[in-house]
Image (cartoon, rainbow, N blue to C red; front, side, top):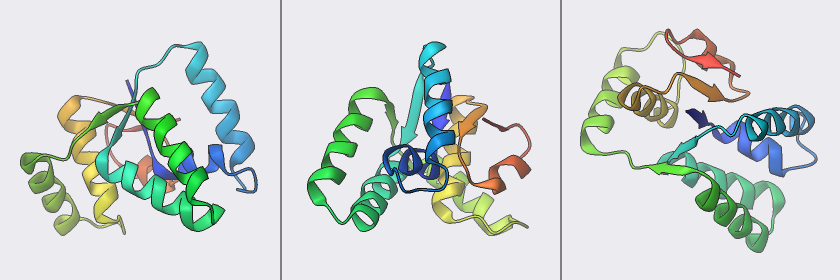
Length: 131
């Protein structure tokens, strides 16, 4: 089970992103391992919004959204995950966004230990292995 973060997905689809080649390489490895992929609804929101802003093309952003919905398991941020994320956010010593805190809370809830991301803050979280 692997969580996909916004930075990874956006880099994969945006050929001008500085991390595009690394994202493509990592995606090939994940595909070869037949990994179960997960995103949260918060991550999905970020992916389609950032894709739309960076690519300046609604049709492309919608296409990316469709691919993600077809290839990933979508985790909804339920009340208990939201409340746990709020505790993480409120008590943090890092500078994590609330969306990142929901990702951490969802990963802990589902016992997902691996995340594909280019966000270095995730490597500072105990129990999370950054790919």
